[in-house]
Image (tube, rainbow, N blue to C red):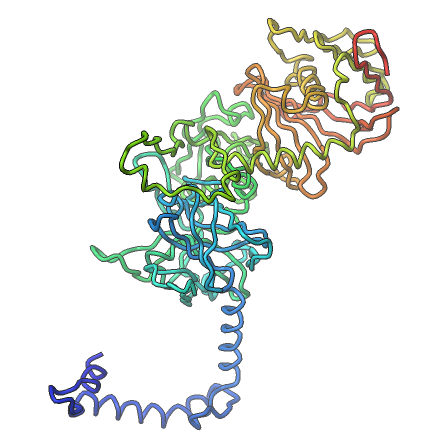
Length: 600
């Protein structure tokens, strides 16, 4: 820096200043380096002549060209995020051509529901909030105005290794006034890092299982993408280590892994305020290094699966657990309500179970609505109004960041029920008949006032359904099979109107380890029902019904539907609860009475 300043300095009269002794030394060093460079490059292998006549290794030029190609391909998808009124600011990345983009929650929170986003084409676009994950510091937004946005593919953050090359892109210090992103290049410094929460005791902005990099990340980079060498998004940059009293990069930055965000993607697209999970149990390291359960809530599903204090935790979500930190890392990458595999050892017995995760927060802890300013308040006049042409893309509702996107998902999944035929108005009574796996015949009857199951050579099971009657576990041990089938009937005949609350929940793996499913959540009279749809095909595949939060679910899984008279119905379905199968029902007949006294 000194020599450069001296050489460019001017005297008061404008005469160039004399070159300093420091400049002489630097020039001599440069000349010596240039003379030595060809010999150095010869040792590296093949070489080619540069414009300066210096031989450069061909592999070096090839690697450089490859980096430039990756950067040029990724740059159009990088987003500069600003508040609609000019406040806030940060970065993001487009992940689909219809405009969905990822960024940080701490970037969008001060921006409000609508924001402005710039791309490297020099254009500014309107954007609206979709879903937020305050705990994981992630937000999903949607850019508006076109349906052919450039986007970058999502990679596999679990495939990263320490030492892999990565690129951080974004808008550090908000200096890119033309929206052209800054690029920094570095390596993965560490994996599976844990960063404690920030945020007034609410366990917010908690970075679990995150990626540590040495690529320069500074204020304004928040929410921007971390790319691997192929130009795939492997993380969202969000947190850096500052030098004391100076907000600049110190060579240690953290990115939220893209695989964690994939777990939450369906929930973010639901337009909800997303929560993370707890197991309902804590672990500690024993004197010999064993990870044991320290406390287990008796209200948790972990307790109902047989886990007790002192039992050893062997693996969770498919990963072996060898430290408390590792357990917190793994637990933190999943949304509340996911069902995941867990292996534990009690004495000399080892058991593998499926456990549904509990919410980390109370609903009141995840409220971020700002109070409405009264008319006449001086600040209200300064609040930016949403763009008139996009005002209908925002719907406010408790528990949601934008209910508009939830309604769209509901419509999409409910349309998939048309495969079964039109059940509208067919609410008087149903009869389902067939045989069980042991050859016994059965008949299920569903009316507005009672649900019943008759099995040959066994007593009948009844579930009263009037408003004064409490739904129960009938038959005992099924988790409430008859009540669950009653809710199936309500869904097919009345849709969302049959329930007190009805919304799209998001996605999760079927039964903890299976293919991804979409979930419609329905609540009625204190019960919760998850209606499950295949993400890949849209087919209605099952029901998870829960009488209350302290009970095991009734899990019903449907086979392919077949034609039965004028409608379709699953050719069979299996009912189980608490890991135990109750029965498999082969369906041979379906009778539907649309009105009292009428049969179809």
